[in-house]
Length: 172
Image 1 (cartoon, rainbow, N blue to C red):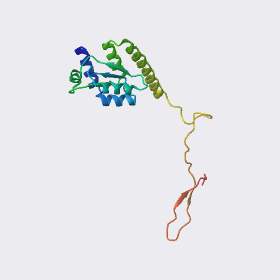
Image 2: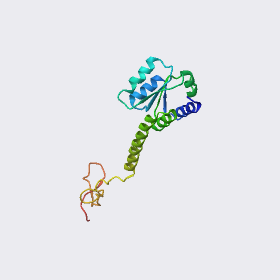
Image 3: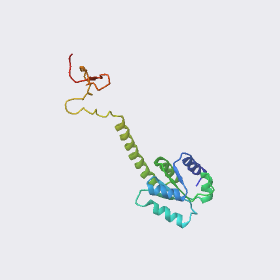
Image 4: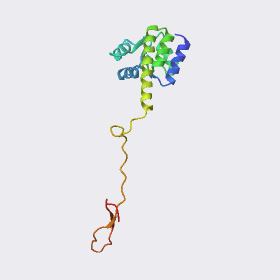
């Protein structure tokens, strides 16, 4: 693996699109947030087995890398890193292209198109005006306006002043 790819991995981490470490990668895969899982060449069999189990029934690609844990960790700003998960489809597509994983890149292109269509549909739905509440039969409804009525006085209580009250009748 060349330094450009390692630098790209650092960029993915700084962008916040990476779950770093085997446990975080496992959790991201189980929650459906991971798009790609990567494992260092000297990762333990237990770590590799855990990443394979984390994929479950999902479309998560597992990529074995040609770097050891120390060099991979150095590129990512930690001491060692045996495994990580890429959380963004665009970054996963770019990484697959850089690694020469052409079949995986095609899968990620299709997924990126689906995500883009879904996002555009959501934006169009949000931008379209919602129908008014009374736009059904009979046209839009208007809010009830209180009518002015005749002022009358309430019955007097012992030791109090009469208080005016409004009735619904019109006129004097």
